[in-house]
Length: 356
Image (cartoon, rainbow, N blue to C red; front, side):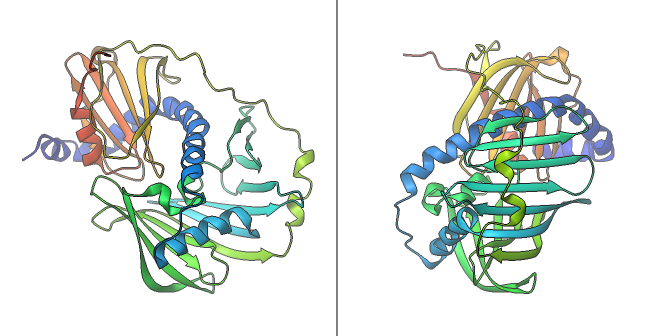
């Protein structure tokens, strides 16, 4: 029996408390990590899009995916949707349109909990949080956190690490006929996706993220969808709304302080960022690494073992977590990946090879 499986059984009765401890450790870091990921994931997507924008779709499935990407960029629509993860439900409204000069406009309003709104105009995205004063603006041409950035570009950007397959006619969604696409990892180190695409408009109406074994971890479904001939009226005055301060990218990165770094990730993952910082919630000095394969991201945190109080654990879900120790270091890996993949990343930490 592997070390992970033994630990998984040992911690089964402590899962709730362990989850709360993990949340305390990474909640602040994930918030700041979200800001970093929002700032850098679109950069990755933009760089890949330039290489794939002219790539011809070779299969019907790729054509369907590319049509979805076009619809997300070009359609004028009003929609409501629900995102579900376990027992958590997040209803929201989603409006998108294009001004006469070609500028994209997008508005997302969360309908439960604190008043949260996301406004995107072209490559500027603003996040408004009420009643707190944590609003900010960043440079991003996708609304990070709603859909993977890769869904807004041609499928060629995801090859050869993912495959897309047309599974024929899908079930009706919001009363509309769909066709069903499956996004499959070329290995079992990543999650798979199911996409229900509107047969008429090409719009994404439903998405499921699932394990390689078929367990659905997260789902997003439109409950209403109305395509418009022109921009929705509610978006017409977005240009006049005051924008919160811009979140500047942290260009002066602090050098890493600890001796070990990730030595293995699934093929296709690229390093987007590495730096040393104090975590927002705990103030622990931490080496931070952010990787992406274009569809998903994974974060790696390295701290001193004696300073971190988390037990050794692995929790699989929409945002999986694996925590372990190596030598004098505590290692926490977080991402939308199977926990076995996070375990392998953590167990393959080693001293970085000297530069030539």
